[in-house]
Structures are given as structure tokens and as C-alpha cells.
Image (cartoon, helix red, strand yellow):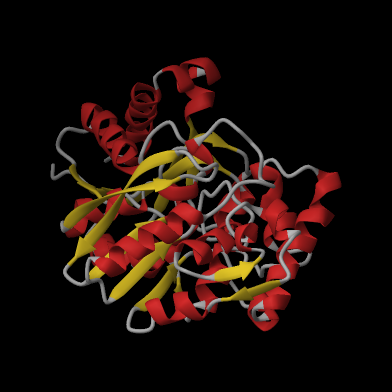
Length: 366
């Protein structure tokens, strides 16, 4: 009997597996149970960690090595992907939460992301696509602006995180705008939050980065100061609050916004591949109802639905019930932790995910 055609399109698993590693582990386990199935790997990203790796795997291109200052001013290596005259920048490489065990969002800066964009422009890119997600910063992109040549009063106010913005009395973004004048800047993010307010960067995403409740008002006030001194109207734009407000800084420089999942899905040709499949398998570290907010499983499930193909999810943890799951377009979701336990899941995530895929293949492979 002819085997099924299965596509594995997961996101990264919360710092334990890259999207590429997760797809490989899923396929390895599935193959053990159903060796006759035709398996395709299509690792995904929403613009956050793994954005460049996933695009490099499907588009090829040249990786430009760019050492930058991370969110706390320590040098860190990054890679900008150059595909002809388009550069792909993964902001998490320059200011990602995973880069440091420290959690001091009042001092964390996006300066390194500005350095990455500068390197891409200097290398001849006429289009720069910046993936936003996974940041440990909440400075509204002030550091990025400084790295690209913005000036401020006092001079040190932009590059020291929200705490330094307290000193800010003037800012001039003419230089970065001129630097990027002949470059098409694109924000790749599915987060549509504004910069300020209850749905803004500080209130919604700040706690993941270490912002405690009693400091939210202070940080919000500093971020608002930058907005008032530049272009307050842009703070209300969808996506301005992405990556701690990096979206706002890029909008200031004339960027347009597209869905991060859409960028990757188009690059890997996921829609066409889904139509030629029997089953689409996605996944992420924690599958919960927030997955609707631009997460990979929701985006992949929508593409599978348009192709009239079932979509299931393999996740580290499943934190939603069957009703919520189906609202996200997922037929069924399966948990690594439920199968092997939390300790084993984190001790050897690839082996554990492969074991889950092998178990799930018994149900879904004909």
C-alpha cells in the first residue's frame, strides 16, 4: 500500500531545539513507525529565533558574519543572510532573551540590531527584512536608532535602555533615515500590538523579559517619551510594539510590515507543498491559546486549511483543550511532557520528540 505524504512544519522549541532540529526529530520518529511514508521537512519561523536559519536552509544565499553588541553591551556573533540584494536580519540574534541569563530590561538595548542592519546596508542590500521576536529588550528600538546614526540630547540617552531614556530631551533621526533612504525596510512579524497602552509592548510582553508590575508605569513613561519626541502617531500602528518596540523604530525609518510566518511560508512554498500532502504536522515548545497571536502553528494550520488538509501539532506541552485547539485550526495536539515526563523532555528533547512522533504516527499514518 502506498504511504502517506507528510509535511513537518514546526517552529523552534523554546530554546531546546531549533525549527530545523525539531522537524528532523519529528521525521526520524515518524519514519520508525511508518517507513513507507513520504516525509518532507519545512521548518518554520514567525520572525523570531531561527528566522535566518530557516530561510538559509530553503533559500541558500551567503551568511555575512557580523559581530555586534548584545542587549547588555557584550560582543556577540550574528549572521545576516544575503540572498542577491535582499538581506534577512534576525533581531533575536542581536537582542534576544536567550543571549543572557540576566533579566534587566531597564538597561537592555537594541543597539546590536542596528549594527546588523548597518552591515547589511554597507554590504549592498537594497531590501532588508528584519524578523522581530524573542527579544529581551523594551527600549522601543532606541538603541537601533543610535547604531544607525540618530543623535540625542544627551548623547548617551538612546543606547542605554529605557532607564537612559529618562534623560532624553531631544532626538534627531535624520541620519538613519538618510542611511536607509534607498533601502526597502520590511518588518517581518505577526505581532500586531501597538507600542503603548494596555496592549502595548511593556504591558503585554514586558513580564516575559523581567519587567515587574511596579516598574511597568516607569518603563512605559520612558518609551512614551521617545514616541512623543519622534512621531507619536506611529506608536498606534499595528506591530509598533513588536520585539519591545523595535517595530516602532523601524516604522520611524519608513518600514512596511508583513507577516513573519508569511515570509517564511512563501520562501519554503508551504501552500503548494501542503496541497500535495496528506497531512501537515506543526509544533512548538508550548502550545497554548496565545498561539493565535501570530505563532507558527496557527499560521501553518491556516495554510493547511486552505489546502483542505488536516493539521496536527506536536509540542513540548499542550495547554489548551480540544475546543480551543480546533479554534486554532488544529485537529489534535500531542505533548512530549505527557509522554515522557518533564525531566526527560528537557534532558534529551530531540529523542523525546522523536518518540512522540513515532507514537502519533500509529494514529495518523495509514
